[in-house]
Image 1: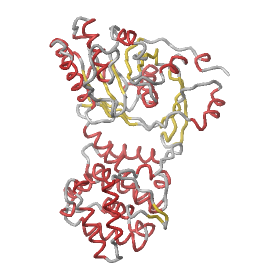
Image 2: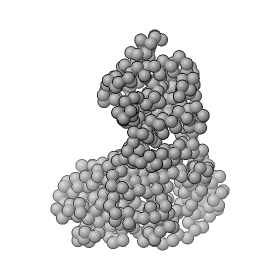
Image 3: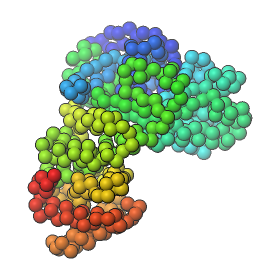
Image 4: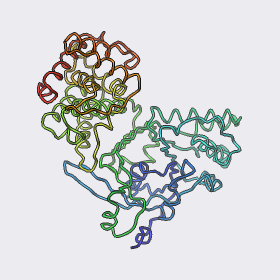
Length: 480
């Protein structure tokens, strides 16, 4: 059977994007977005890719002439859809560890306008051992600083030859943090003031927020996929239908990167904070609050939970009635996003186990759900019943048992020890339950405050916990 590059001719575009990272996410997200822009607008841009680590996929990518197949699977416009396309936007791949001169040569291209990265959350970090003389530097920001310095010198500090730099790493204010580190290297390497001035004035570092689940290479069904495609592709990648990219940036970035004109869910905003909060509270908050309720109810996956008539309604009502009213964006934006989240939860192509989400549930509850509880009470002078019930269910979950079978709890040692001591001392009385709730709510190391001081929370949590233990989750959740 022929290989993908033997079956298809690749179009030629101008190299406008340097992409640092060749993994599944960028290929299923950023490169697909550029593919769509090429189809729907006059962007006509290609991507030159470098790998941030010594070992990567660049050789495989070059063997296939930068071509690969992307499957998008999920719910689209209310229907279950699986569709695929050959992504043809990668012009070439460079490994800076053995092609450093070629890596630097990229910076000499006057048409290059964008630098996009995804090097994992640990990638945006300063390494004091990186030196100007290294070829290459160890860290991603070190390599990038060297490349930017090379471009600065090559174009004699021309202010029109800066970049829009858009990191996709999942850390808050990723663009600002990357810029801080680059300026730190400039200082460490004693680079001239003119370069620092060029970094500050000629380059735009955009904070960004990305959202798409990318399961990656479909190892288990690759034979079936190869038969369907009729060619061999060693870089097939799968992603969900949903996508969202929020970019904090000026008008010129939006004009030159016309993703919105291609009908894509790419938003250019002055402040992405409300969108980050929306994602954390609705998507992540729904995940975290559903886990203890759904798992103790007898469900094992997200899809099973949201499709259940009882638990599914509980989750939906928690999101639409208790989380959305606490958020700042327009009601329509919030409801549309929440409905997309519910569709994503029902994706038949993704098996998302509740136990995998349950890792470190206590700290997740603090960052993802507690702010909604506090804001709801602040607005309504009352507690959100379902979210408080979820808190009670969380305490019951950490009892470590479902229908007589041990739950494999995974959390920090102090959290596990706290619950083990509390539940070992439980004697079946209301007074004993009140003590458990008091100790959990008062565990400041996790909550960073004493939740017992929140009016009514201790009593309501105890009431719900008592109901769960006495009736069982299947009956208790029917209360809602």
